[in-house]
Image 1: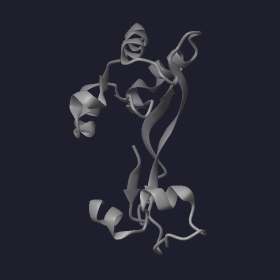
Image 2: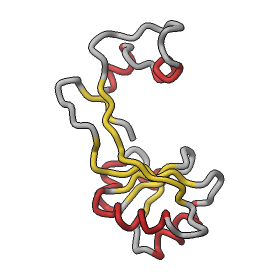
Image 3: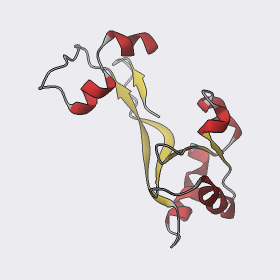
Length: 130
């Protein structure tokens, strides 16, 4: 999850972890390994748009199509132990970051990065959702 915030608040990390999964790993395998470390995960498909509520009820939310798990701060140590297992479906972890919108609007030009153009950062569409 990425959070787009106004430039005034400059916190860098949310306190949660983003964990990358092995490509093509099933939810069943992820769930089995998580249970070995008492890690309660829910699928994003189960909770729909209520991701924050899902994070309140579980240690993390699995985004299967993205191959990513968002882990609450309190469960970070459990995940670090899972990363060391030989046959772990968890590949790597990094802190979840905040994104800050730029003071100036980005133009859809060759000078803009592909990611900025693809996500439409700086356009009215993104500002309306924030």
